[in-house]
Length: 131
Image (cartoon, rainbow, N blue to C red; front, top):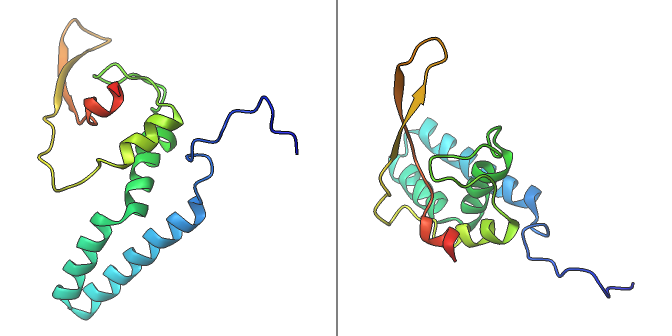
């Protein structure tokens, strides 16, 4: 195979998405069964495992930056689309142990009148996108 002139893979395209989705689905099923049994301790333990799971972080970044319908629409932070390298960079610092960033506020002009409706949108960490 001739690899001269080809770009090296950055890791996002070589990620085994079926395995990641399966692992997250398996954790969700285990949490559901623990809830049915009334086993609160096991359910909380599985929730903590899901939050710390690398698979769940990969899936969350993929759903937020690639799978959603508004992925090409610029948000309040002005970012339209993310490259695969930026998506990989978002996976590492994504954690629920940090303090959440505040919601960005904005105004949407209404088509029928001159009034503007307020809205809020959660943003991802800006320091990752600047790197």
